[in-house]
Image (cartoon, rainbow, N blue to C red; front, side, top):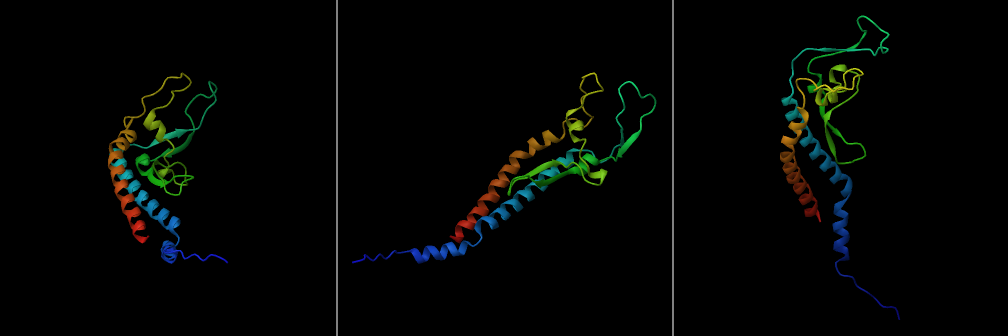
Amino acid sequence: MPAEFDIQGLKELERKIGKLGDFPKDMRKELFDANRRLGRVAAKVIKRSLPSRGTEFVVYKRRSKGKDKGPGKIDKTIPAGTLRRSIRARKARGSKVNVLVGPLRGGKNVAYDGYFAHMVEEGFKIGYSGKRSNGSRFYKRITPALSRIEPRVRRLQLVSYRRIYGKWVKKL
């Protein structure tokens, strides 16, 4: 004689699971949007710490050591304020939720290329001597600005995560 079981609450559980729908995708999108908003705020704070005006500088083509004499050949001219314009919030590679804030490299427009950001921020080697420059007069502006804003961004991130998780828990 087969035994019959009656599981109580199964229909209610199935109904709640059905309410979730595409839970992971939707929640991931909300978390990414919240992080992107916070990243944009952080980018604005960093941009304020950098100068918007100044002089454009010229990048020369690399010359052979000790062979080329005279004026160098200009490779490209970097407009003033390029570092400031290059700072953006962007999606982190390999992550569905995280956002990175900092200078973007590459692109078609030189006015938004943050390729030289590390030289401005950290300094660079002078010629073949191995000596290190102190960077530009805007030396070490990005890192302190990020460290100043980090606690505030973390608090805002925690509040937004609680709101998003709370919304999804209510659906259960």
